[in-house]
Amino acid sequence: MAVARVQATVETQPVNSGDDAADDVAIWHNPVDGTASRVLGTDKQQGLAVYNLQGEQLQLLKSGRLNNVDVRQRVLINDELTSIAVASNRTNISIDVFTIDHLGKVLHRGEQRLGLEDPYGICMFKTAQGQANVLVNDKDGRYQQWQLDSLQPVAMTLMREFTLSSQPEGCSVDEQTGQLFVGEENVGLWRLAADQAAAAELVSIDKVGAGALVADVEGVEVMRIDDETAYLITSSQGDNTYAVYDAQDAHQYLGS
Image 1: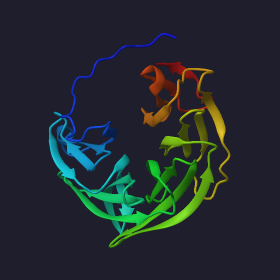
Image 2: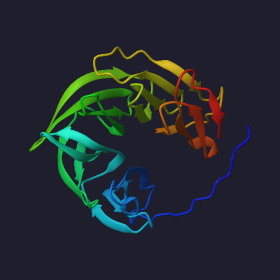
Image 3: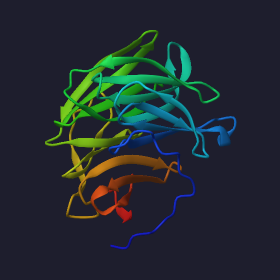
C-alpha cells in the first residue's frame, strides 16, 4: 500500500497533562476573519483547550476528563443561531455543551447526564431544520443520539439508541447526504443513516486487516469539498496512517 507522506505546518503547544492526554480536535471557523479561527482540543485529564491558528493556547476550560469534541456553527437554539461545541465527559458521565462567540471565546454552558458507563466518542450534526443532534458512544458499544433543545439551561432529548458489537470511538455525519460514519476500533468502518427516526442498519465500508485499516480505528471525519466531492478520512492507528475513502456512493478507497 502506497502511503503519501505529509508534514505538519503548525503544531499546538503541548498540553500540561501527561499519560497520553491530548486526544481529539475540532475547528471553529471565524466567518469574518478566517485567520482568527480556533482549534478546540481535548485534554483527557482535565478539560478543553482552545488554540489560535499559530498553536498558542488561549483558554483551558477545566471541566473534567473530556475525550472527544465536535463543533457546529449556525445551530438554531433558543431561536438564535449559535456556534456549539460538545464533548464527552468521562468524569461526570455527561455530554458537556459549550458556546463559541463571534470572537472565538468558548464558554461552558452545562451538561446532559448520560445513562452510560464510560462515554467515549462523540460527534454532532445539524438537521435540515438547523437543530443540533449529538451522537455519543460507550466503550461497551452503545450509541445514544440526543437532540439539543435549550441552553437556558442545557436540555437535551434522547432520540435513538443502537449498539455495535464492540468498542467504537470516532464518528462523523455528512449533512448533505444524511449518512453517519462510525468506527469500531478492532472491527472496521461502518455507514448508517443519521436520521433519528431511521433504523440503525449498518453497512460495512472497510474491515480491519482486510483493506487499509489496522486496529485501532479511531478518528473519523467527513471532508466535503462541494456538491459532488466529499472524502471520508479515518485514522488507522495501528500503522500510523489515515485512510481516505470517497464519502459518496460505493466509498471507494482512495489512498493513505
